[in-house]
Length: 317
Image (cartoon, rainbow, N blue to C red; front, side):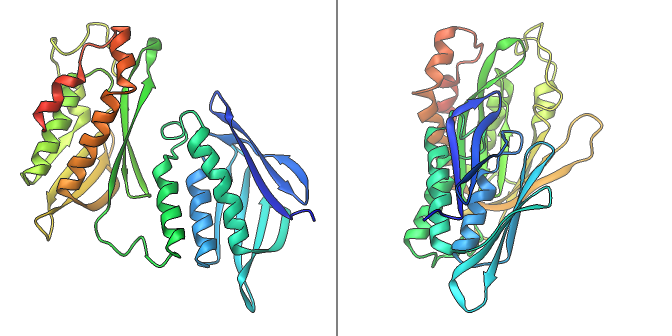
């Protein structure tokens, strides 16, 4: 019997910011345009969670850089095992069907797992690190009895990756994940000042030396001939981030606010969270050491970097 709905990704097909993907409606395949500008995977995972715990109605738009596909989930009357799935493309109905909730969740998670494991750049370009799926599957195994929002403390994760810049030069970068909702990209380039400022900030978090603000836009644009190459043309948006930290109610926690601000720009608050001081620092050190022993070795071999990040690690340990 043909299933009313299925979804299929081809994560190894990624090229120029696009990935092959198909909606399968009553056995008929329809191409879905999947762009790294608007990656759908986190929204799909949230959709799967809402269906799994029956927190319906729930919907999201799958952006196709112009057109869009809308996924809608509604509760059914008299059956908590099923739900109604509605899929529309540019307001044109593609599917309206009553489906089993957990069967649908399995379909979505199976495909999302393929992306998280097989897609080049899943953690960076496509903003879907595997730990998001691991956390979901952990909750699923526990029957979704633990509410992820029950804790006032937001966990932090750090994902390192190579970032291509102007002139074909690739430099280390990392993404700060604060829970599942906030991701802050740190395009550190080959700038010792910004790396040192980051490590100094970690040291102050560890020692509860609050309050403080670190404006990475100002740090990156400070005049220092010893740290800047003569031909360097800083990207105006690269370091438009300010990290503001202050003490929290409990001594082991701290409040972290991140906002954007560049030339002639009003500050925009990205996130305002409470985190564990030691866990924040320890998680960065763990991810940083792993990066130094794996991907970073390629940076050292090409001889293009002016800043060897190994020299910074003793400053925080």
